[in-house]
Length: 70
Image (cartoon, rainbow, N blue to C red; front, top):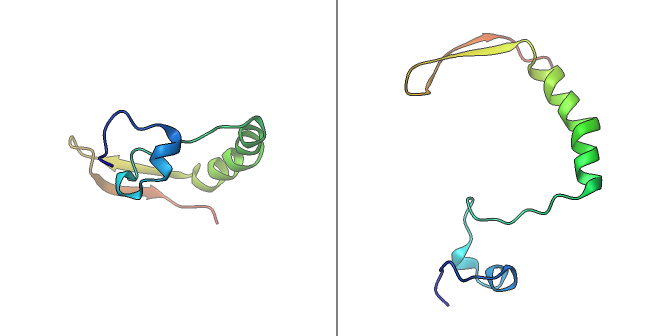
């Protein structure tokens, strides 16, 4: 089977040649949303709140400013 725009969710998973990091279907559940909002998001915020980056016009990181809270 060729990889084309006519793949369904079922035929996609049966055809590993079409898999890539850009076309994986994700299903967001209420439980997953609650977990993200109540547990993961606060952890990310607390870990990286004191960290900034300086970027150039092309979007490349020039300098890290601050620290990661471990």
